[in-house]
Every structure is written in structure tokens, then in C-alpha cells.
Length: 114
Image (tube, rainbow, N blue to C red; front, side):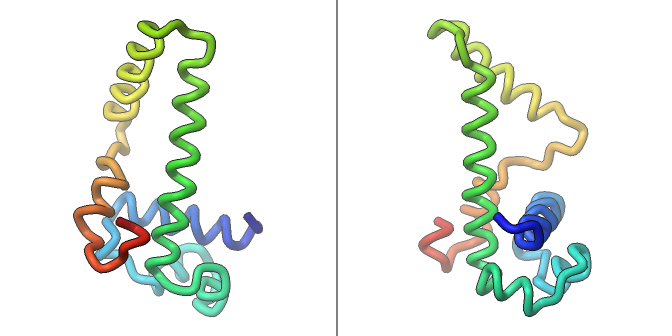
């Protein structure tokens, strides 16, 4: 991912996580990222595509972190570590729920996101 598209995606992910998908518009993403709306649309096409890409990035990141957390553990220890990993995540000061669950709740018109 190019530096500019990563900046847009990182900014959008943070805003969506804090405020929800419906409460954040492309103008706010543009303003917070410092990129133009034209650049945002160049890389992502529209808000739904941006949401879809963010969910893919987040899915990949979570899979990688979970895989690392259970590396070299036996079956029982792996299961316990997965629960611990989630508890640690839930107890973070900035925890604001699961972005995937929120996407399912908020976005009803986009089959790709669903």
C-alpha cells in the first residue's frame, strides 16, 4: 500500500473505530488525513470501498497478531492464549468494540462489506 493510501486508511480506521461508520464522512477523513478528496477517491473510489479495504487490513492484522500470540504453543495453551489476547484487547483504555460487528450493524446496503 502506498504511503498516501495508507495514511488515508489509517486515519479512516481510527475515525470509524472512535465514532462509527455512519458518523464519519469523507470530508472528515480528508481533513484529518491532510489529503484531498480527489486523492481519497483515487485510491478507494467511495466510502464503502474504503470501509471494505479497512476491514480487510484489520482482518489481516488481527490474524497476524493472533498467529504470533499462539506460535509454538500446544492446543490447550493456544486456546488459553487466544482468550487472553482478547481479554487484553477488551481491557485497553481505547477499546470501542469490534469494528467487524459494528460494520455488520451499521452497513446494510453493501454486500461486499457484509
